[in-house]
Length: 274
Image (tube, rainbow, N blue to C red; front, side):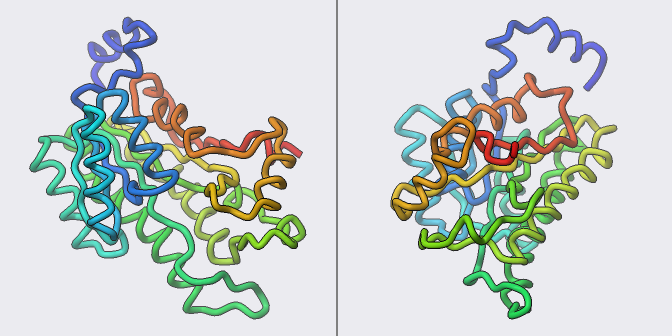
């Protein structure tokens, strides 16, 4: 960003700092749960939204939902573990909109049921690492090629509180909720530090990189015992909702966060403060 551009940003009124009109954002894993909440947030601020996931049919459905609200959107099928598909995702986006301003590397999770040391399964470990770490790397790397040339952009990765501290198996006892194993926790820790690397590597080109680490945000159909535990274990005494990520993703995607990079934002209702 040039000195002239910086002066213009500093003179913006606060409501305009979050304006994303004309911007273009890709959200991988954007068709469900947290991903769709973040896609909706950026679209509501005026961005053109590209929803990507392995389920093209669901991406198109979600894209149409955004269109019904007046948001310009596109649904594209993409397996983020496939470098060719990731490059095609970015190429198609740039071909459609002419630029790429925000890449939210949200695709992730567990591929198979978690395994735990000393009875770990290497296939489960590798598959989870491939989806989370490789997928984030490929998405960020492909987006960075465009953003470096533009001399602007924001890469937002998705970590987890369990990338910063391990989970306590006693918390999950009797809830029917499956906790992340060695692979998930290792993957999310790697993503957090990879984000710091991105910030260092890309900063000179005007590209920001930050990580959002959500706490436990269970789906509505989660076990009642788990919902109660999530509510009672946070300082705010309520469970997290997908919409709780809207504010932080808006900050990091917009000019409001233009001097923030290399940071890990924990959004957990205070779950990790003790």
